[in-house]
Length: 410
View 1 (cartoon, rainbow, N blue to C red):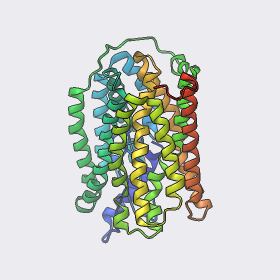
View 2: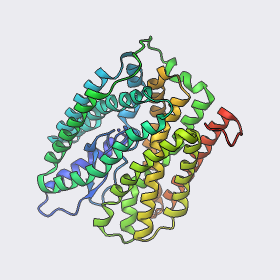
View 3: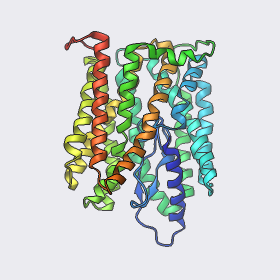
View 4: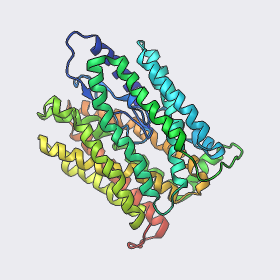
């Protein structure tokens, strides 16, 4: 599914420079973003290519909106979904998303990248992501978390394919055709989505009102879920953005390091589906609490002391699994504590709020690395602590629902 929109834009301009260079340096793939979030939403267009000394690895496209334009559109798109259903939103979103990527492929000026990939493409991506996610929730109750996980696993698969695909195409066909190839692939997938995505419930037109967007925050369980997700979004993208640079700093070859994000996303496919299936049987809040604490522990206990290829790759694999669970379970938690007819606007409101954390989390991480003169310990501590705090607030949300009953399925 992008504070990272400007980062992605700058990466694209660097990619143009690489394409023109007579002897390009090895390319480093990053990610393409969906559910919204960086790089843009579910798009592979935001895959970054850059020299390791100049840029960070990309944000997980497989993750949610990561703090940019498409995330902030969440409440509006969610409200439109509740009023009119997914069909027209998907049609319009498909056009703007693909059109923006195509225009990015022929852009050469900074403002052109801002307009095409920074505004037009994420505008369309938001109108694809939110309706598809909200419509999924209407078809399931007992297996809702598993359904969200299967849906979200598609973006993880894209996070494996797009970085490798774009890296090869930029090197062989140039940046322009790499972008166009990604856009054509996305167009084909969106045609299928437009033909198949439907809501079980008919739309329910209601008057517009700002109060509808903030009213859910007066409910303690919903407010605590938003706070916990906000804290989690502060740190969840940091390993995605910095693990390649961290690995090369401690001796990993550039070629092997370029595949770390693909490894992380490959394990995220299982992290989004398996915990979802477990959550529907043991409780969604229960499962979210376990996987959230696992993510924090992995950062604090495994990533910080990692100094060689094996522990770094092991961390990437395990963190891909645990962070993937958060991606699939978060919308399931919102659906569990919401009226099904308000899932669209409630989910959009949550993402619009937590996107602020994703937007500022990465610059904070970069500032910590600079303050430590190129070291990563402070960044890792910040990441682990905010993930741990988010997990604690998930515990608070559970307590607000069922009290201190440890055996309750919730």
